[in-house]
Image 1 (cartoon, one colour):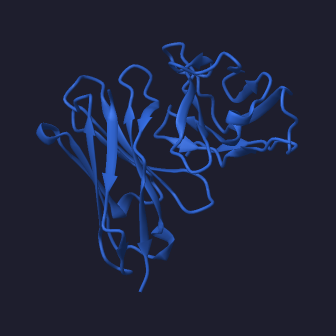
Image 2: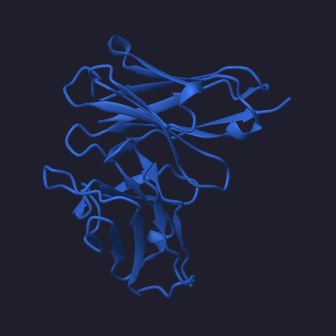
Image 3: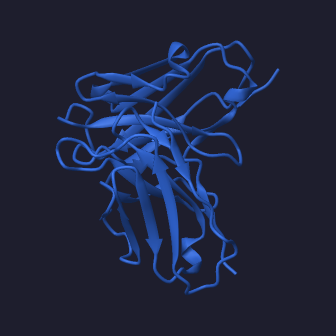
Length: 120
Length: 111
């Protein structure tokens, strides 16, 4: 059974760095073709893809945010991470992590999401 | 960057009616392996998105056969045959050919 769960600070101040953790089970990020992605959603708005990391440590970023994002993984502990530097109120959103199917490259399993508020 | 543009529905929709949601990409999503890298997701109110359709027309595991996907390289349609209460939510298309991009979403409301 595949599960993913996001965790984060809840609230942080502008200019700080947001650190998010995705803890998953039921699959391994060392399996050929496997990946994990991060997606966010401001309240009442649509989905925005942020970044993907793959089994071979290949990384891809949304070009509009690329210079602020860092994605990484800890394969042995079944975790993926996302850091966003220099946050601002526009980064207030629910952040999801999702498994990328090694067969279809779609997001086939999603976490419940974690809400992050940036406020002074 | 590939831009995804979704159409709107004439909400609210009567229960039992069939609806089609459109999505257009700014570049062909047909890859050299013969697959079209277009996915559809449903986000029900208060829930995380769930995968409905991948490779433009293949239903994900456990998805009702009332959902069907079709299209060309740049124009796509998600059809729901006989909408039910559980279909209410926002539908997103997403391309996976070059990086990933979501459409803005299409809301389905039931009458």
